[in-house]
Length: 324
Image (cartoon, rainbow, N blue to C red; front, side, top):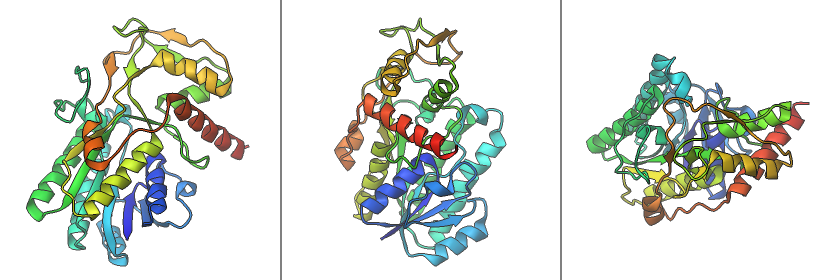
């Protein structure tokens, strides 16, 4: 069966496309390449280059393929920048999702797995964030993801669309030397860039009420996130009734200082991070429970922190070497 992966030329989307193909599915990637890379699209997948805002293009794509379903990852993903570009964020993430759902309905494609985000929770105060934790997004990006969930759930009530949304936390690592996190805002790329440039990585805040004073976050390997998308797609294809949302989290947190120590060990570049003042709004701890995903789709995080860092560093080094 063929699955459409929107945003399949991006860091997470390309891992999802690879995992689908490894599971025996044909894959069509839809991506406008605004942040993804053509080279990230796995060999054997078909690339349809275009935007979800182009309804005629969507109709053409859905008319060309017999699709079992859609895994929807395309969107504008920079939470901080979304505060400055709210309309752009809403057009890309909300209008794009609405257009996609309309194209699916017109083509009688009945299953969708939506790439949501932990950003829907905002700065949650719970010890463990569960699917029942109140959603209080603090950026247009987080709001747009929550609206995307609502759109899909409303369409499901109206049409019987089979669906689920996956809210994942800090996605890191790499499952292939050919694919890496290219975000200019995420922790791992920022640290790697600093190390390659000979500067000192920064820790923001060391007086939080955590074991070592730095923020604690939940990190999940990108290959585990991709596996969850494929498992959810498979269950929908089998006709299973899934929950509307699932968290993808490890259930255990890692502090920024612990990350820095592991970075030094994994890269072989010793350093002591520069301590900077805490940033306003940064919560001390955000750790997710992934129990529902374990129960319903058999998902289990498989990678250690060292493996996450080592795989990410290897991909970053391979990419740097390729650009020389």
